[in-house]
Image (cartoon, rainbow, N blue to C red; front, side, top):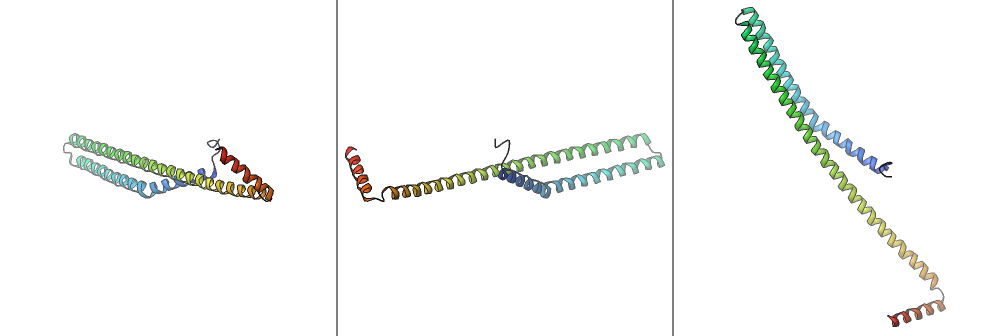
Length: 164
């Protein structure tokens, strides 16, 4: 039933873990990725602008128009292919790193929950033992309040010792 209606503690720790993961990703992973992509996009845009300028020069000079245009397109395509490959590799590396970090955070959270559970169980056992001792003391005090009952109990214990 705990999976169907999770406790407040589980919801809290899960939310906290997720928030920490998002904060770590926002702080360390997304900014460098976006910066790298923006720089690469700028360099690709600059390369495209250079190709366009070369095309205009070719028209004005009418010097091997077809050949220069073909070379510019091939260069642009190569730059775009390289840019896509680099972008894809950066994104893949970031995903792998983020998954590893998420798995590490989840494992740490599971370990922490297990440790807290064991501490709570130990504390519960200690409290149970303490209550059992107090109850036994009260029962013995009540049972042995009368001298006759005390003597009867002592004789019973002596008889049990002789049999054992």
